[in-house]
Picture 1 (tube, rainbow, N blue to C red):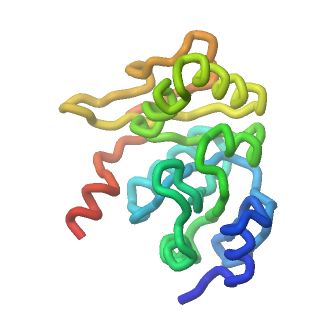
Picture 2 (picture 1 turned 135 degrees about the vertical axis):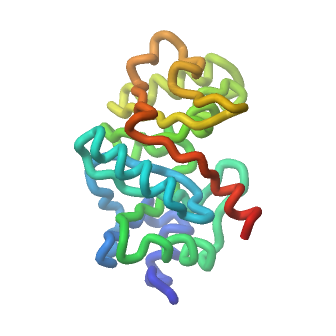
Length: 201
């Protein structure tokens, strides 16, 4: 099944547009993301943990939460049109999905100023790792850009080495601590990973 018109998807993949929003009822809008919060991921596959996290974040923030699938991966390059269609089809008739050309959170801030980004703990660790920014100065520059765009982060914990790791376990530069908030374990916990599901499949 082809859900996204090939011409619109080609425009996105070739950079003629920056995003496509696919609503739960199937409407497709170019460069018109809805307001609210965002849960970004590769969704390979989409699983109940993603859906539960989005719902918990929506309730906690009192904001609608959309899913975002970047068609460009910072490490793996650009997805094929067929792969984008396959992953997008998982959301059809259920959830709003944004397809974007924004692989990094600083790129997302340009598309979604003022938005809240919902993160799992693993993603938050990578976001704050200076190695991805050529050092601590680069990390500070990126976080400053996110601050200036009015963006902030809601972080959900996860089990690591037998204990539940949370926002308190992250190394956040002191000046940027206000950008981050914790989604309490009592509100959301899902001990599941996409990697494990792919291995089982």
